[in-house]
Length: 97
Image (tube, rainbow, N blue to C red; front, side, top):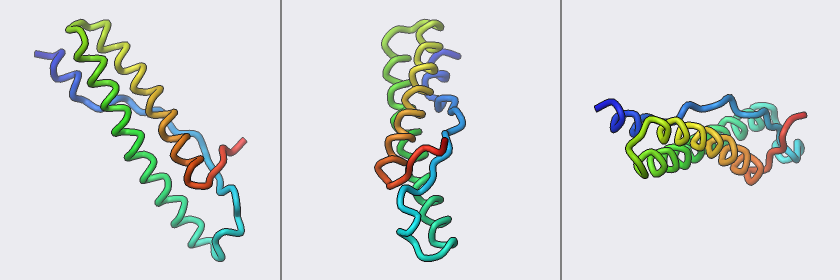
């Protein structure tokens, strides 16, 4: 019973990297910049969680084994990180060094 439930739980998410606006002059006020960043981060987190959960569910359902669930979680975490970064880059942000 535990294995089917584990496949439905969302992947453990890693802390996303910090991003800054690529073109700071795009917004006139600090409030506009903050709002744009919050919207981009929220949108990207939702997209990354969806991609992460989908890959975790796919991998976990391939074979009914505990090792597979562990691998699914690892791949889901990788998918979350990659999806979040790609979304933020496409939204006009760059990774903060």
